[in-house]
Length: 83
View 1: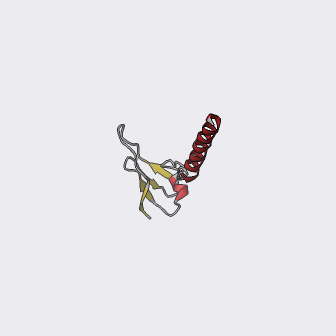
View 2 (view 1 turned 90 degrees about the vertical axis):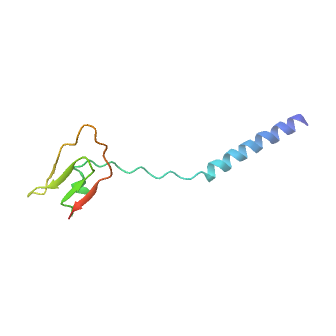
View 3 (view 1 turned 90 degrees about the horizontal axis):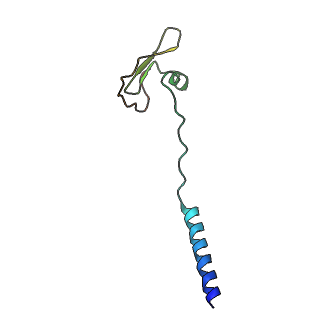
């Protein structure tokens, strides 16, 4: 009888762990980090963009030129400010 109760307890724990595993929400895939100059390739119609630390703009040839961020700046999501 004791073996039966132990086996029952083990099976209950295993079933519970499997149910938790199946009901766990899936984590969203991490977004690929894009550098400020590389954002020019992501949004080709954007003429100027910022991450609240640096500002980038396209020159006449279409290449990105970016300002230097301050030493304590905490960058945010990149946002297009001029099309």
